[in-house]
Image (cartoon, rainbow, N blue to C red; front, side, top):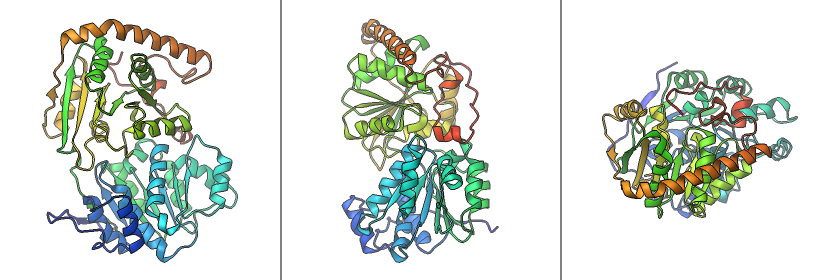
Length: 450
């Protein structure tokens, strides 16, 4: 296959949406949604996409990728409004819902109908939604394949567009075999968009298998954080991690904060500790029901809760506006996970802060992350030892409350029943039902955890 053309980012000012060739209904929708000027990835991708080319988009999270693939699909749909038109594959349920909302917002004047097909929701109601012939299906691969195999009358044989969003994560989550199955039952004559924050060898293999003479559009370095993000670390002994987290939450109380944990257990425990101490915190992880996950997101987005305690289910792709601070309760073991987490703040040109809690066991991980960022060093976050000492007793008591509450939940058959071993148990990793459907093996935990 021919090597993808390189479409380099020019230094000239970004064009307008109108000059890129978008039609009036889409221009009106963009104006109503307050999208004033195209982002870099939109300005680079749209001219090629509107010409009907396959696209490989490499851009960091928060760069406006969704509109970059939604706008050309909607423009083509305006010209040929018939049947199931496009299918978008996303790695997580939340991202799938968000992409559907984007399509519905941008296509409101056109009467665009979307169906969101994800795990954790009623299969029969999804089958009914598919029978109503939506224009766009946004799905996680596991559940989409389930409908392709078991829902009578549903197929993707007339599909015009296939989009794989966050392709690197789709493949990291072992969706590869299921994507191969889906590729076999959709038309060869189609337009394909593949968007990814990083270009791994797996993504390159998928690109060769599914795209035809694509244009490659790249608007960021392989690993980078935005210049408006201020990055800090807070060094403390491991047993004092909870009290230092509460100290941070206290000193940043007026800000909207996302706290990332490595395990479901810690996400649940930390959110209980914070709520016990009077902080408006809500958890988000893959072992909550889908309605609870969407409810947590809605509360945080609307400002009803100032603190979201999440596993990596919230680190990729989710567009949560106005996040002031990201706190890494655990240092991510992979540098790209760090980049995706801190990418929740300092979005669309705004400033933001990230603070990573670092114990004596995490120094090597932090140095590796700094090396990946081109040697950019994090600054030390200042602390007040007296204030931290005063918090110790209340935080310890809140920790005991959290342990009792989680034991009660477990004994009543609630969250994490029979799955939670301890704070570092292998079954604590955050996994979507869709991933389990895909047969994802439980990954081994890294060393150095409690």
